Length: 456
Image (cartoon, rainbow, N blue to C red; front, side):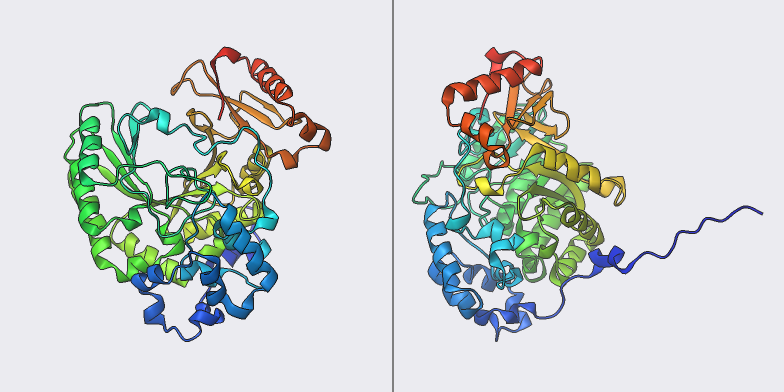
């Protein structure tokens, strides 16, 4: 008789990813204490009640946060490179008993006391998207893929946005670059795509596709489907993570996406939705209900997270996020290193942290539901597997990548946050000459030419 080796029953915490926040959880926020379910699930109400100023935040959360925190946030609003806009749904998920350590507050509401000085190599457009933009609102970096940016507004504004140079209204610190915001400008992008037969894959982002009216979802989707060589299309939106009720209460928008997905399928073309969950705390019973609508419509959803200090840089938090995404039929696709953008240095972490977390997460669930951790190489090198660096100088916090299929012969450098380095090394980064020496030494050790260096 064969020997049987049965595993012991799974412990209760193995099912944590299935335990989603239930009930009318928004009632714990003073401004929403009397809001019924139908009102809270109304996407128009969510948009109208979004918090955009420190005064609105104070009137919304009232006595549940300290005056010290409110004043800290007021100063943070003034210093932020991104405008602030936070949905009631997101506000209601923040632990206002400990807002400084809350992963959702960290993403959307700046506080001055947490800010760190920028790394000296940071810029507003660290990916050099504008350098790869042949017409307004289009980025053509990879041979077969283009990024289409038809609007510059979002349902919320993420503090860590890689397009803080263009997204949202101007702030006290940043005058925004103009994207393609009109149908006439869109047609210039469509014409460029039509003239480039190598372009098979188009990402529609912005801004956020959640903010496109249904008629424009269909206008853009059909225009791209009509181009014979376009084989794949992705509508990118943060919406399901911070305003999932729109999928439940704006059927015209869902119908428009469904129509493009269905037409694409009949043409043998793939149309999917890309979204952006960063914390397992963002996933509630409302999310599950909304994702079920998309799943039943046959709309495939992929997720792209950003590795953010204080949000998901804990291995167990990332593991829970990945498992919870699988539970609601969202494919965990990418986890990005935080881009080298200004004003949010306290949100970045190290390349080593990403490598360690990926090692921990891999094996937690099926491989097709396990994200690839990537560094979107500063300077336009594109996405590199985070562990595929040509050289990693951990002492000085410098990772060197090459991108032979994107920009051959060039070196692309990612910098760990300076506060994660030793005091001695931090002192080196103050001196410009030493910065150059450290960077060029790292590139030489990577075996790449320093004369082709591309820095952020």
